[in-house]
Image: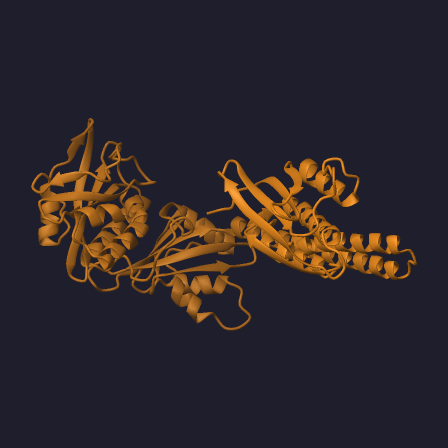
Length: 489
C-alpha cells in the first residue's frame, strides 16, 4: 500500500498512517457486512482511482475472485465512487451488478480524516445466498452500518488504537451489542458460552454487562469499578477477565455513528486454553533455565574439587592434567550459565568466546595477549557446548606450546558466518605468532589429548572440518569449518 499511495496519490505520511490504521481494523467491517471491501484512492491528477487495499469476509462468500489491489479505474466509470468522494456521504443507490453470473450489491463509504475525504471504500456484497436474516445477522448488519457511518464521519478507526487482528477477538469469536447505558441487547451464542465459562448461570440480555463482568471476576474487595466501566464499552479498549474456570479476552468498540454515543460493540473470545498453554510454556522455560543453572553450579563444584585435588598432587604432570580438566569443565559451565539466562536453547556465543579467551589467557606461561575479531553470532546449545570445549583446547594449546616462559605474543580468534539460510556455516581460525609447528607434525594423527578432543568434537559431533597449518610468517593457524543454523533476520 505504501508504494501505491506514494506513486499514484497526493496523500502525505499522516494520511497514509490513517489508511494503515483503517486497514488494520476493517476486517471487522468486512465480517459484519458479509462483504468484500476495496479501498480506492484518487490519483494525483484526479482523473482516476487506484485500489490500494482489499479485504474478503470470513462470514460469507466473496464478490471478487481476483486480487483488485493495484487496479486503476478512470473517474466516471463508477459513479458511486465519484458521488461518495465528492459529496462525502455513504452512497447506496443503484441496482446490483452482475459479476460472473453473481449479483453483487455495491455501496461506497467515504474515508474521512480531519474533515477531508482521503478515499472511498467500495463494499461489495454477494447476493447469491441471500435469505431471511437471523437475529445474529441483523445485529451484524446494524453494527456494520454504524461503523460505516463512523468511517464516513472520521470517527473510526480510533487514533492511537493500533489493533493486532491476529491476537484480537473477531466477530465470529463472540459478539455482544450494548445500548447507550451498557445494557446487553444481543449476545451471540459464542459470547454467551464464554460467559458461561466464567460462571454466569443466566442469560446476558437485559443485564448490565459491566456490572455482570465485574461480579464474575474474582475480587477480594468491592466491585472493580474500572473493569465495570471497561466492559460497559465507554472507551475503545482491550482487556481480559479471568475467573476460576476460564479466561475471556474482550474488546470494546463505542458506537457513535452520528456523533452521539448510542451503544457499543464488545467482541470477545474464550482464551482459557491458550492462557493455560502459555503458563505451561513459561513453567517449562523456567524449569529448563533452572536445570542449566544447577548444571552450571555442579560443574563449578566439580572444577573446584579438581582444583583442590591438583594442589595435593606432588607430580607436576598430574597437577597439569587436573588443571587442564578444570578449564575444560569451566568452559562447559560458561555455556550452561549463558543458557540459564535465555528463554530458548540458543546463545550469543561471542560473550562465551571472550570469557573462554580470558580464562585460558590466565594460564599463559608468557605475556600473551588474546583477542577476538568477527562474530560467532547466535548458536544452538548443541553446537555451543562442544565449540566452547574446542575453543578452550585450541587456545590452551596455542598458549602452552606456542610460547615459552616470559615470551610475548598474540593469539587471535577470528569468526565469520557465511553461506545461505539453507547452508549456513561458521568459519573460525585461531592463529598465534609463536614458535610454530614442530617438523613433520601431522595434526590429524597427533596423539595429544587436546587435539584428539578437538578432532572428535569438530568432525564427529558437529559435522565440521579441522586443520592446523603454519601461519604466514610465524606461528600456527587452526581453521574450523562448522555447519550451523542460520541466524534469524
